[in-house]
Length: 135
Image (cartoon, rainbow, N blue to C red; front, side, top):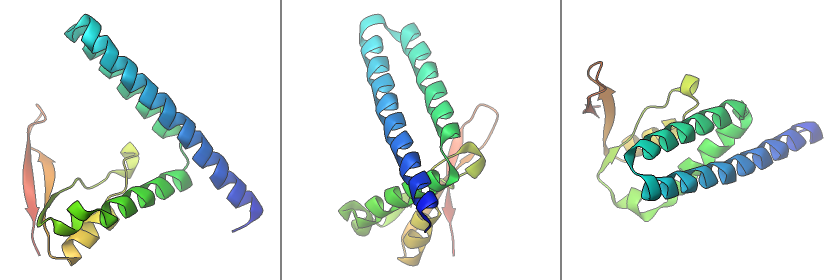
């Protein structure tokens, strides 16, 4: 890895850490608002939090997104609950929506014989069902 690429990766990670702190603060504030003012403020706080998260994700580079996805996958794959589980509910990520890449988790789960279920939206009201991934 070149020095410039390493520097870019470090800067991306630092931006992500700053974004993570900011989002945690926003979420904490939303929870406090909910306790103080009720459901209308809660709805507005949730909308503001979602908007902040979406904006933050759009600012992240592909390299940072990939590194964070790999770190999340590593953490889950090493967790006792993962190795002891027989069933797994997991979404199939959508890169366009800047979601965590779950493909490594899904591959590991299927390779270890776990029964995997993915959510599928059924209708315009966003009702969902879980679809079993067969062999």
